[in-house]
Image (cartoon, rainbow, N blue to C red; front, side):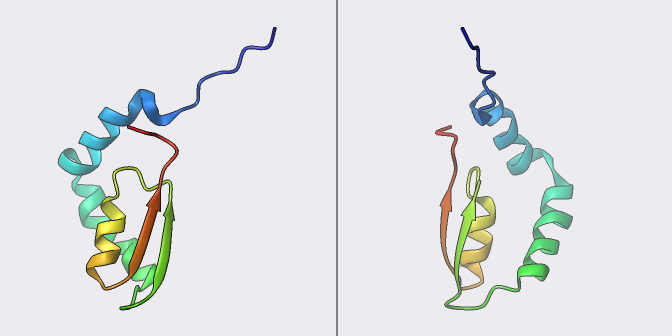
Length: 76
């Protein structure tokens, strides 16, 4: 019998959600602005965020006028 290790994000979804929404100045002050600078989204751009988690970056992109779809494998 083959046993597959559960590699789902579901196990850490609650921790991750709290980390990126409440506890991480680094995420809000460095990661998001840096990624926005690299992507340089424009009004009307169509962007897909694969592995979007709770959609924080999707909302940032949409705030710049992009049309964004976010998908994530974790239901949590």
